[in-house]
Length: 382
View 1 (spheres, rainbow, N blue to C red):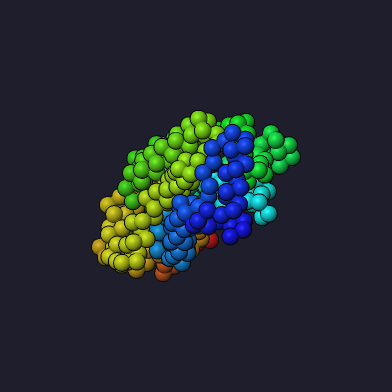
View 2 (view 1 turned 90 degrees about the vertical axis):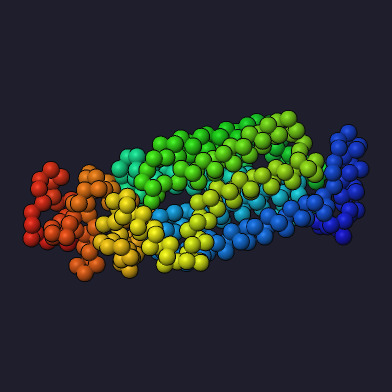
């Protein structure tokens, strides 16, 4: 079968086993179990990709809109790159005479930078955005939201360049006799440090926003996701240091890769499963229930909801920002409570924001916060 993955034992795999014995190493050949794992995870990510396309297509549907569909879709793309890097780094596919034997390209850039670190950064960015809105009373946009993410990406770029320049024997290098990429302890330590710090930040942010309004509360989903991720992180960290040659062991390499992407999917689907399934099977009914929940939380004016069942206009506020509803964008412009009858809402007839049905539209920037609102004064927000 040549240098290709097969359900049966190939000549190349037999040669790898012989070379491993000469080096006094125990090696399980790649074969049926690796093929099955690759097919199953690839099928899962194919479904994930379809789901990502679906939420992008329905990104203006309010229950999906409030989940940051673009960020969630980017997480799926990065997770797929992570999986592609895992196939090389964890020894599931033959590397010899292919581009995969470039351990730094796939092991550092694809798997670590574009995969693991980008997934972690996007999750942290989403949690930080919710913390800005509900913890700091600031909008889900602007430099305040994106600057920490850009700084993180800049650090990862520098990290990747340094790893690329440093000698392979100090980071990750290809061992030709057994056709595997080997990670040095120092490189693994730096990688695990980055991932642990990132997810501890995510956990801290989720803890701070655990009591936000129920319409946007993801405390249960965050608990499930963080529990799964930290369980996998503990397993992977311990396994990497107690069994550094795990890629040669069939059970360990399959468990490692499977757990990584199981945790990723648990996180993603714990957040997106409810809005996606309801958007598919009972779109309008679920929207009515979701808007009713907004009403109970006192946020109905941000969706122009004035009476039960009035959901036709709520999507009009989803025109300016692709990451979050206008409730997120306007929190920093007013200091009033969402339960205050003077909280702003969108009036599609005049294409502007108003405070109350008895008060004409006002400008958020031109009016002092403490002065009473003047009646019959109409100033376009734009």
